[in-house]
Length: 331
Image 1 (cartoon, rainbow, N blue to C red):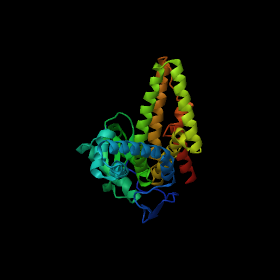
Image 2 (image 1 turned 45 degrees about the vertical axis):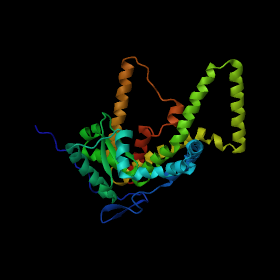
Image 3 (image 1 turned 30 degrees about the vertical axis):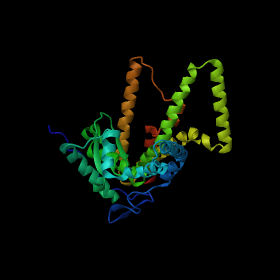
Image 4 (image 1 turned 45 degrees about the horizontal axis):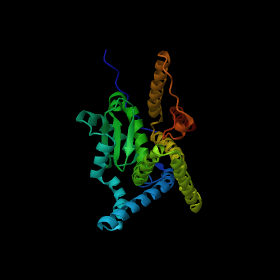
């Protein structure tokens, strides 16, 4: 008996309620530019400002030291760092990022025959030029995809091999939502410009670990001086210096909302049922892992409160709940 034919991607979605999308002649068209920034993107950029300010201070200090030592003007280093973010939208630089930072590769001919038509269908519904993006594959046995920089769209080899075309379309519609709302480029820019500050912070933590080797008196003196310096800086900056300790939780909350917004984008293109089917597969896989662990008597690792607050993705139940609400509200 021959296997049943694979279901085609549905081609007649109901008009969405998303104000960023509008239908003309049966096709969805984005009324704004292809790459823009929604409120969540702007909020994420604002939340990263303390980290960027810390990075700017680090880059200035290093550039000033180089200026004093070998005579290269300090503004050269600061200017090069400030302009380096434009490489996020430079196609050759994106290819380097895709390969060496994200671990992606170009799709094979067979994968491209599978990937390309689904991507063209998704972008056609959204009124976006699909050729503006670079398609990549991650060798992984999980169901996942990613949107990064200005033009990178990646999907796991397992997703390409196992998901029906309609469900793959739902996953890609979600990633397209990250691109069209600016989540992808803003996330990478925030990471890049906060990197010097994070490196400096890690070096400070390593230096702080040396305190254990000091005597009790010396340790007490160092801790007292460090505490006094921190208090003085906190008072002088009206507490703004402490913002980097709080912003990771706020950034994670914004990231979770961005995921729900990308789900909404996929639903607006008519992919809500297909995306829900993919999420249910992931949910079933997690439940199977928990059942296996319970049968083997292994302890179940349940994320604690801090881990949940720092998670950049909502749990699957929350995503399914929001997608179902959207379906029920559209009837």
